[in-house]
Image 1 (cartoon, rainbow over the protein chains, first blue to last red):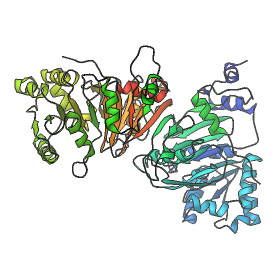
Image 2 (spheres, chains in turn brown, blue):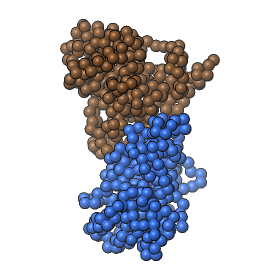
Image 3 (cartoon, rainbow over the protein chains, first blue to last red):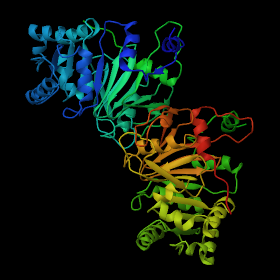
Image 4 (cartoon, rainbow over the protein chains, first blue to last red):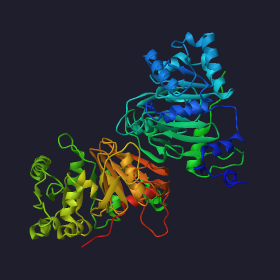
Amino acid sequence: MPLLSRRLLLGTVVCTALPLHLAAQTLTQNAKKSGHLVIIGGAEDRQQDRIILRKFLELSGGPTAKIRFITAASGVPDAVWASYQAVFRDLGALDCEVVPMLTREDASKPNVISQIANADGIFITGGDQTRLMACLWESPAFQALHRAFFVNGACVAGTSAGAAVMSRHMLAQGTPTAAPQKDTVSTDIGLGFVANAIVDQHFSQRHRLSRLLSAIAQRPDLLGVGIDEDTALIIEPNQSIEIAGKGSVTLVDPRRARTNREAIEDGDKLEMLGLQLHVLPAGRRYVLPPLTKARKPSSPFGDALEQLAKPGPMRG
Amino acid sequence: MPLLSRRLLLGTVVCTALPLHLAAQTLTQNAKKSGHLVIIGGAEDRQQDRIILRKFLELSGGPTAKIRFITAASGVPDAVWASYQAVFRDLGALDCEVVPMLTREDASKPNVISQIANADGIFITGGDQTRLMACLWESPAFQALHRAFFVNGACVAGTSAGAAVMSRHMLAQGTPTAAPQKDTVSTDIGLGFVANAIVDQHFSQRHRLSRLLSAIAQRPDLLGVGIDEDTALIIEPNQSIEIAGKGSVTLVDPRRARTNREAIEDGDKLEMLGLQLHVLPAGRRYVLPPLTKARKPSSPFGDALEQLAKPGPMRG
């Protein structure tokens, strides 16, 4: 038995320094239908080496993959689409189209549903996550998105607002504050591809740690996930976590922490004791051990990774 | 036996909601000679309610206490002294003087040594911590400062650069970066009142979490302590920790964490897994259980508090 497999069976979280093709080979043995999530902290490089966008294209199937863009989060969807169209053409993508969906009515149209359902890769652009969810929530397009990901194995990427919507519990609004405060952020329901996390983007650049802490104080069963600009958290559900791009991903795990949230007033500063903090830089890849009933997480970090890699249920 | 005492004996860290005079009474039973440290994250309020400066005056002994100011960190020491002189006069302090010490030569003069040695409260202003330590390091004035604190029980306060010098390992230089990076900060030797921590100030306001993480990656045996502006960490060595002012104090404990620091190059982004994070808001006070040989910390937070409350050895 090769070393990697043995270590996996022992329940160790392995940080692969393996060449990617080798790691991919190992994973193929446990391959599932669901696709990859590429959750981008905004401002991904579109002009230089474009690591993240190349990675998305590769995970979608390469140059011939059907890539579809959802621009409904944006206030200037035409300009956003024109920008990505040029970049992906330059990257050699042969089949890119924008999904003509900007309103809730659009989200029931047959051509919209069909474009999403048959995509190999779906890219959700930035803008306002509540605008996007107002358009998509429980629509036929939403269900098509879930089928594409969970059944067809399409790769789903989202940047900025498109990243915020990836989880079930979505950070909807909240001004960053110097210190974490009670109930200064509001959450809403997102696309639900990630079951147990709240995602925040532009994380280090916009200094959002306190905002993320305020959010997880409300939901101490969820991981807080802060993604830097030009950085992607790539999740292969229940299998692996990879960080691509230039920055870091910050995980804050409140599940063993205690707070004084119940004892204070709205807007008061929070006491938060015993949080776990993990900082994962671009370039790292973590392969999860195979799922068995008896398995216990090997460490608080291994436990956090497992939570992060758990997908929500398929809807529709 | 009253409830508080019993809980202390069981080794629990108690977050006192007790009236201050009652908590103080309990502490008197274990009173030691060493004084309090008032470690201020800079920009403390000098015009409104001035909570922190009032607290310093109270811990020094009240209006008749001999308060002495050390301005050697500052590039404009006269202006700094004039400002504090006016504020403390306004607070009712009757015996305030500036210590005439701006150079290393001054730090050996008898009147300087005598002023420091006989002070009830010593306030170290902001500026540049390396300038201050260049003046003080292993000088007779340094020894007088240690004797005042450890033997006479003088209260020692420092703001901004005056806060950075409180620990043995002092954050000397380092540009804040978006993500923690290897060896982008440099440390130097400080006054050594705090044995097991590295202090950073203006913490939330200047977004210094990544800088603090970079520092503790170099010294994973030390706590990282980030103090917000207009916020004070008040340490009664081996006895209690209190947060005063308006913001929060952030503790990052790397002692159970692992990093990839040994495997990467200078300036590369750090992977840091399994850090403990505690956020303590102003208004909270934590009383440590009495020291006994057999005692084990009750929790990772209790353990961090104990580390933070340990004084360095007296020098001189």
